[in-house]
Length: 209
Image 1: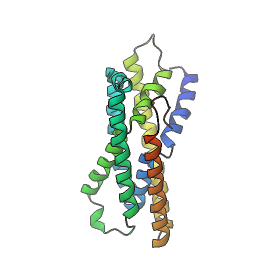
Image 2: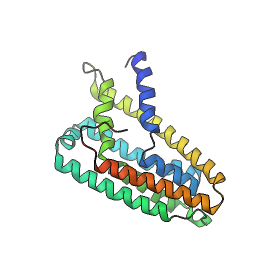
Image 3: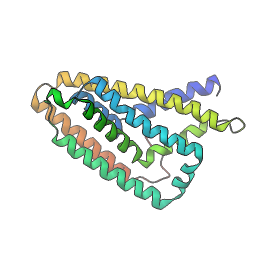
Image 4: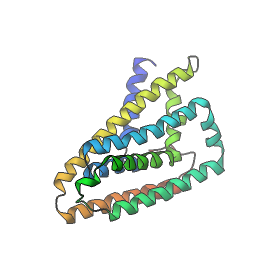
């Protein structure tokens, strides 16, 4: 990739990373509820899901997923149901938690949520099948180029996780009153429901945002 292409790829890629999708909303809420480190560590579950998607793209299996309406629809339904499940959990969550809740087990549980939320969203894999290939030179080593672009994408994704987590920590300090915290949870839950509906009515021909 040339320097000019890199200067186009990084801003466009980071815009995708920073879009307020369900995973970023979850990271924000995790940081607000637990801590910055808790949310960032949980975000590794999302990176694991994206890494798996990259492997699928590299092996050519993504083409099968993209061409199969049944598989695509099944993943979509799973993603929608899980989004709604998370929305209910956020809606019912309380701000004040005991110290015991921020344990290693809670981090693992949140990481699983991040992973399931990312892997259950078929629009996410379209980023790797429709966006990354635009920056690959077909005359070069495609696998090597995809690996480099993937590493850069994952690095920018982790930065996005950290930024949303920092926002969550800031909101934790601001939302010390139960009423405002309750309103925040309701807004996050509503956004997750909106993401679920958007996913439900999306088609394979639409680029993820």
